[in-house]
Length: 165
Length: 327
Image 1 (cartoon, rainbow over the protein chains, first blue to last red):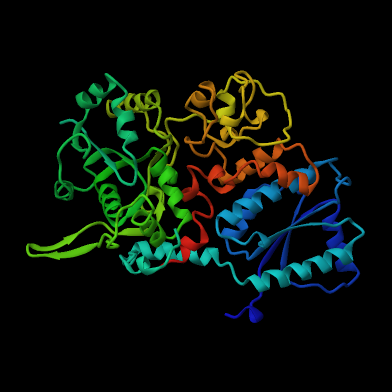
Image 2 (cartoon, chains in turn cyan, yellow):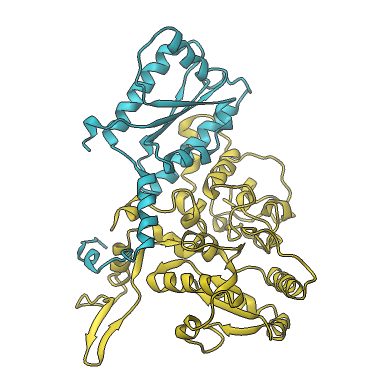
């Protein structure tokens, strides 16, 4: 499938106090933005366990958007800074696993910033569309089928690959 | 007739076998209570001997090692068929362990590197072939699979016993339990349980003091001088895997002055070991701006290897995406 016709699946985590209300505002104000994002509301971006992101990616999401209150405006004082630290380390770990770190994005949006939420969502969907499908769930499935029949075999052909030492 | 016992090693180092022998006189209890029918490292037995056994005729099989090639997979399936209780024994069988880090590279690169590094004398570029014709017939060696898989991803597993290797006192306790079960004096834990480990984290067993201190840089332990022997290592900026790691070892490494590397695998309730460690490491960083946080994170040179040192093959993503793609 070429990337032009690929519709990314995005999981979005929103915080109850700012970014969820921003998305609500975008909706009530009838702002148009990409329909690819599935929002999950958390009480705070600080609740975001990196497990959620990894689970989303391994279950078929092409990208994950994490949203929260602006720095200094967290309802729980400073939990969004914790989200920021986790996010930055998580991106490094994902890069080591061959997954483009750009598939995970952190966006700050206050309750008044419906327009910002809508615009950032649309931008992110286009960024992920350019990266193409991730399809980790399909690739995992392939592995399971292979172990059922005996085609789980690597022939010496990979040896021909040139690797610079 | 005594119940039958088997132990097998797949993709592992052999340390689990040593740990079993390291139970000292307890090993005599194994001999007194079990008929050892298959244990390649300790006795001579052939695969066809196992194939000839009746299904479910072995009471207890301790399987250590991950599934790296088709021979491992064949024996895993065979022992599952012949065993009543199959235990994923040790970190490799539970979660891939150090051999599981091979999942960071496509299998072709692994073989290429093994036969091409600067210290390897291989001028004619000779690689192992999985089958070869000789006058006496065709010879086979096992074929590497695309990636290392923990035992559970290949066959149904009854119990998990973590550790690299499992601590000898934990092995002894499990042996005692199984002997009691055989004599009808105790019940087996529910299927799928983690046995021979605690129900908390290494931090809970660690005697070092925690003061909720934040750090400005991560450092390798050899770059910290002197290491405070009483203070939490993470609070000294040393990446210690204790917060995500299952208890059961009595915090052996932190007590000996070095960081926990996470060999007991994920603690109870941890779905993804690396994710839990990301949270733990992030929680001690004393910075609020992206630039400063990035600078502190530069102190962990290999974040993926650090947080998935033992758990990569058993994690949610299991491998580098490049390794998935190679057919």
